[in-house]
Length: 299
Image (cartoon, rainbow, N blue to C red; front, top):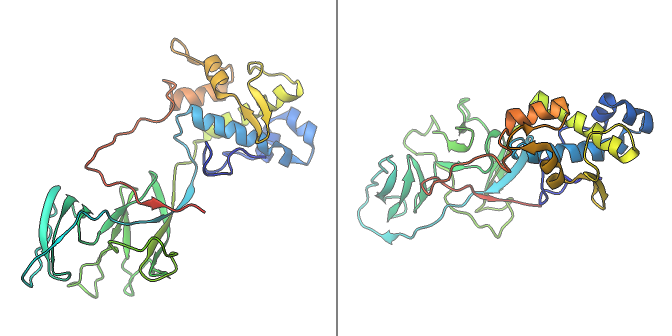
């Protein structure tokens, strides 16, 4: 049983390696299970989860996410006139007359991306850096074609986190924008809604896969009495399956003076390269000026 299948739990999207990988790299395990390598899937999952955590949660693997973007409304008041005053495109608090809605708009603008106000968004910030690819965009329950009829793209992925709406060459006078609001009480198949499904995350490097195989083999050996360098009690069997006591492992494996020193060459090389300081998570920068990611949908 894998400890990584529930998205609400701790760990990457899916195990870095499989039971087949463990059997191919661990003679003791291969001999014990024969052709039934599915028995080793729990060791593959536990090793993947442990190394994901020890490397600061940097390598989630490629995960599929679905979000329902909806702009924060800062409130508007009715204005007058018939012409539209375009947004300036600068960063900061901006205002302008929206001739389409017949109202003044006021809000914080990040370039051409109005984060808070009464105008539609031309781009949205997608949760989970880096975004790898866009799977599907639904507007009013209908899948949006990736290309306009002339072959021009309908959207663009910027900085691996922003989904930007592109202009339709056939309608140069109409600014293409994403919907600004939606009814979140309705399913995404209904009118008045929109939804983005995409893939995000970063796969572990090759040395991380080798480290996971080496650690999984050690965990198997510790359970069957084979040769093992892991501290006693580090590998446990729970109702969720095989797990590695991360607190015990960390106290044994890392010191401020030596860094990572497990005695497992691939594990030490991987962790020393990706998380030499033994941080619990990768460093991040937060700013109130950066748009927050939209609501994620969970099954």
